Picture 1 (cartoon, rainbow, N blue to C red):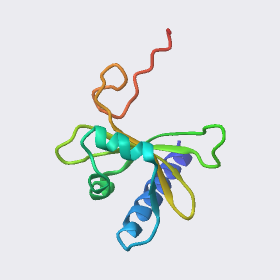
Picture 2: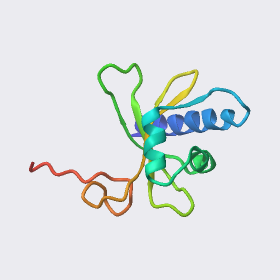
Picture 3: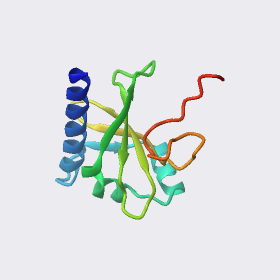
Picture 4: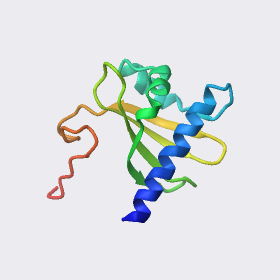
Length: 122
């Protein structure tokens, strides 16, 4: 369990670092068209995400075929908004925000806004 906590802490620190470097006008964060569309649909902006990045908490990590990096799902506390998630790919050069969304569907997320509802009966 110590190894997982250490990995979680390192991922959170590295992604926050890339977002903070972005404010220095470097290209350390990239946004997919899908993430921009999802943000817009949920009444969020890239500025909302950037301004809330210090609240970032890693809640899931998984590998997807075809990607050289794991996908990281982070929870953010965006002022005035319900639970917000961003899904990113990370490498040494930049963070790619694949998608972003509000985690408000009670059929998909527990009340904490972080835990996915798992129905193993189906």
